[in-house]
Image (tube, rainbow, N blue to C red; front, top):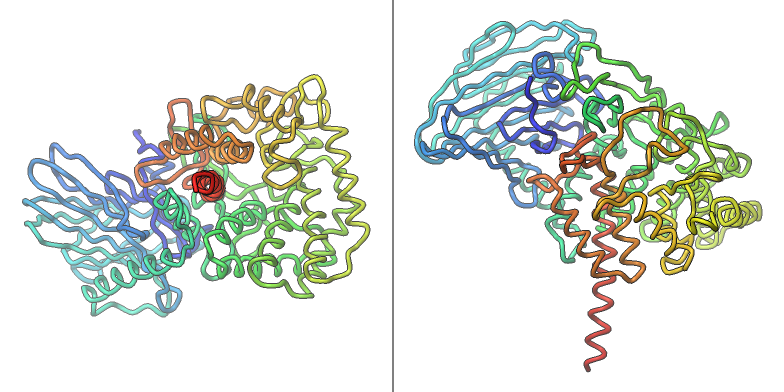
Length: 609
């Protein structure tokens, strides 16, 4: 079976879930009704058993293009041939009543005449449940899952539909300027048959376009790379739950970090780490409302674990901590990369770095958003008190290695951040400063210089006794632990360049080094680490090199400006897609580069006046 490359997809969504639309006009991924619900379309992971919603013109010499309507998440797929031009406009209306979910596909023939073939073939419960199809009108069909989820989908079209082997098909021909609409709805008890089909489609289109244009207009970014930054912001917004305020790491599951390998994780959950990093990016763009919604979600998580255990590393979008990992044996996986996993057993891991990432996000929100409440501070103190007693433990850290715990530098660094930011928050809010936090912060500072510095290699190492560096140490100057021009840091940066940088792209670690990740096959370069590297270069004063590498990295985005988690040997996208980590890294790096370049320009202007 042939698969569309991961980078051949665009993303649409309604702040509850998302769909992936291929360059070939097929929707090959959609979970309903929420991000982490079972899939109804997953041809991206199994062409035959996954399910899809495909609309294709029957041109013989067809070329395809894909673009977003400017400043929106409304996607346009264009088919070009000697016979004419046709388009599919895909979007998911935002803020519908009754918390409903709808997917709209508008087909327009721009020039010439074209025939189209349509197949809507949902496969419920990750392709594991059978379903029934019922025609309720010549242009309306119901798909009813026979699985435990009892999901019901309704397909309405402005052309006749027909059933075939559990799927719904359509064949039609359009002349120039003619349009056909398709509406796929997730049905609840509150839904009634639509008598205003054409009006609903048209009004939904304009409401959705206006919603996204209004949202992006509130961005404060006025720098050199507005297209890349705004698209990244729109991606981060798509990954945010309107209902809960949480943000998922990526909307997909099972997409491999190595083709044919086993690192096929489910990222449809909220990592404290990823979402906290995202707050940095959104705050920089001026989106305080989104940052505040996430802070409320975190406050609830801290309150819920009070008196029981430490904060978890990840949760479902509604805050459930149990995300048991299982295999989908019925899916062969993207390009036969198996097993396909749903759920994520990493929720059981100890990752001490999340405390630093959380406290840094709280510090920024308290500084530039709103002052945190007394009760929230008391809940945070419970987490910090736990950290005081446990920061010396080995853990799995940021990369969630499954080859055994270590005393990772990155976790030690973020523990320092946790106490440092807690002290700053207390002083900023005129709160009593816990002297224990000061002592632990200073002990960690000494520990990093004593235990992680290798005088022979002249670098901070991945963990004490390791013989390699880790790209996560690029965060040391970005978090204010060390000056970006400190000699020890510059020699560490040089060691990272020698061991982990390929041209401008950065591997996160060497899998064959002393901290194996439990899997054999190697992975691609980690795109967020590339952006960290660029920011370190710019802060070190290497601005020309930093800008050159940043703009080269932008060239690895797909045709829509979207990034996955990693890049393979041939520049292909690997891992779940699109990835919040990568896009927030792009935003933060663009801001830093703009600031550094503006400082140089202003100094030059002053010198010439």
